[in-house]
Amino acid sequence: MLNQKQLQQYAEAGYVIVKGFLSKEEAHKLYQVSSSDQVLSEHSYAVRDADGNESRLALWHTPGDDIYGMLSRSEKLVRSVEQLVGGPIAHFHSKVMQKVPKVGGAWEWHQDYGYWYRNGFLFPEEMLSVMFALTRATKENGCLKVLPGSHKLGRLEHGKAGEQVGADMKMVDRYKERVEEVYCELEPGDALFFHSNLLHASGPNRSDYPRWSIISCYNSLNNTPDGEPRSSFEPIKVVPDGSILQASAGLGEQADFLSKETDISLKG
Ligand SMILES: O=C(O)CCC(=O)C(=O)O
Image: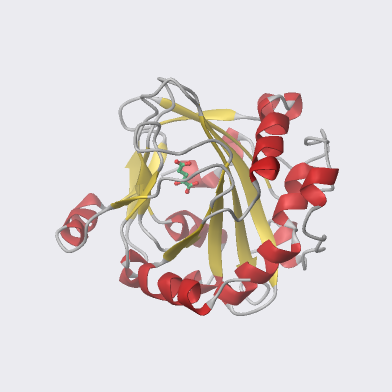
């Protein structure tokens, strides 16, 4: 559960970093399983940034009994997200973000709600993402950077940026005149909770080491999309903390993966 100071930081800045949310052992296990998960690899796709560099990701909606489900359904995570969105939650999707050494591309400035609005969600306050570092995330390997307080701007216009969707840079630049961007450098196991309207981006991976992370995204059960995905309507079946270390299975073929072709967030 998050403490008062953490809740206040999220309310004011639109994000909060919780150091050591997962133990080093849990983060290491998640990295080991995900980096050798054949099914995950087969369902991963590359997305080009505005300079043509590629980042890979795999995204699915329904949290299963695999190791990723043990993370996204874990009691302390679910209760923390509920504190931030103000009520019971559903799992919108999880994704494994894979930035390989020297290549992994950038993510352009955007708000997640700039994408998710298209799914018919009404209340950006009642949606958020949690990024878990499985490897170190540094400025050099393309950690997430955020513009504090930008969740208060409301949803900005979004348009094409490479194969991605980016926020209106005129507005982003105007806001950048007021606040310094913050590089969210993370150690394995650290978690970054961020509001669906927080402006965020990340640079390419120029280092010799991977930047690997899992992002789980949630909506409140009061804030459901327009019909799909099913998982966004279903209360989460919570599992005890510690289940990650008991799990070893990666994703099964039955997981409801999103394909690049059906990823509406990429359609500008
Ligand atoms: O993994 C990253 O660097 C960026 C991911 C991101 O911006 C997102 O999933 O919305």
